[in-house]
Image (tube, rainbow, N blue to C red; front, top):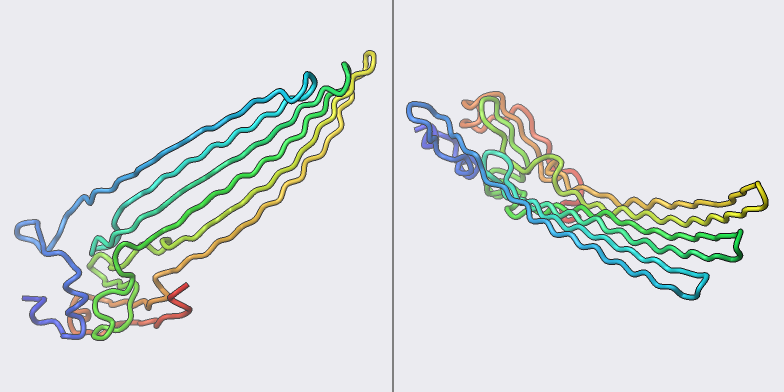
Length: 220
């Protein structure tokens, strides 16, 4: 009855709410399924270049995909996480009392969120462009606010240590250089408009308390 008496301007949004499934109430209870697929690999190579020089290489890779839902409409999303690390080490015994160790490391952390269901709620031609809807007394509609993360973090590290033993003395010289590169971005659902209503009655009558239209480029 409440759906039938609602303003046509909010009908596409009301259709996103599930029907009540708790007898005698207007509540809908659910425990949505979520899943994680994870793979990991480790690769290595050890090689003696000469009797006094050795080379070590290591690579580790992790790939994880997290599938879940958000909001009252169970909007589906997929989060992909893929850290990767590479390490190269060279050991050189220059003389019986001099050892040089050179290292290079590169690590990359990737995080990408994908929306499997449309970000825009309902029918934009009828209810306007919306990415998030909050009604007092109801669960919110829309994807999680922190979703749509696009992250690529690179770390480069160069290091060298020289050890020298002379008699009863031991000396060690070295350097360590690190470079961090951050490439981050987020397509917040607020870019598609945010609306708030103070009650279910105002929601049915299509009288929002506030509306913030899209702000930014929704394609990037």
